[in-house]
Image (cartoon, rainbow, N blue to C red; front, side, top):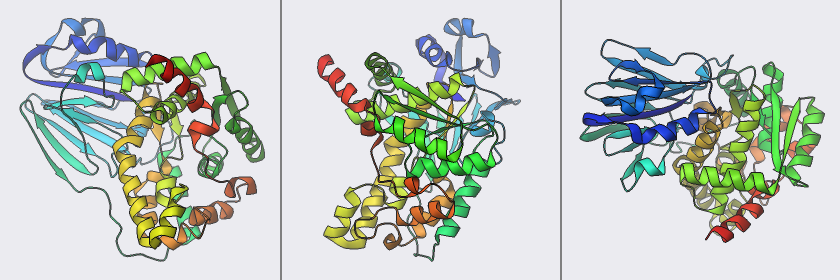
Length: 416
């Protein structure tokens, strides 16, 4: 489900949002508008004047509750996929004529934004924002917004406490529990064939009915071939889409315009998530499950080896903590929103609070050892009996292994 909310000091016309809302709504099953507590036909929305307006895009279920004082809504996988038990990633919003209250989860994995007292929902529409100052709702926070003010109480990102004895078995059990609670029965798993997505696919396929793996890439790309082999070994239905240069460019232009992405890397990752989401949607899936967060939590990036060599385990932990914050600031937003623009809800089992807590408590020595990265997670994957090709796989950035960034860079050079 996608949320778009406006709030103003006096009754105003919200027409400037209409074409942007319809652009996103084309990928969802239905769109619904509430203005000052009343349901309004979508076609009337450009003409309506109200103090606040809430636009909700649905895949299934009914996350909107109308009360005497206003409207309450929850954005989570619970309302997108059957079989989601107790999702840890959620955004709850309560709207009255006087204020909006926003509750975010432990890592704000369902992103929202505020600009000048106006909640802008999951998508940072550049044309709507214009030159306004934008505030991303922090993790584990409660924001209270009035038309002329914003106040918040924030716990902040979880810091590392005392290191604890964390075993591969304990980690595997936490990830299994996350899959059970956060993932629906008929979902799509974004599969590159690497460690992060391979382990998630194995656990999902064993516990959820109707799961399918999806992979995208340009012709001859590493991901297409590697993912095919892994899905075959796991016995999971697998659907691939070979991207033409024209498709990459069209998707890049769309996510760049809709989300305001700038760097070739961000545009490329936005394209990959958006196309995977669109592929999942075409298969009747409304949830895309990804391995987001594993690199930052378990030491997946090559630069961590350099940090360890230069400054020891303290420097390694500092680098990983910084990247976890950057994941919240940018990575989660890009991936969740690009998937939402494709009509599905993004779910990242590694970012469940229990998994994050275990990862932060585990000594850095269990994550990077010499030149070997993700030591602890590889141990969990071996216990889960994933193919050796998966648990031994080295990190390969998706923008390169899919071949997408090369096309995006050529296109960006032509558009400058």
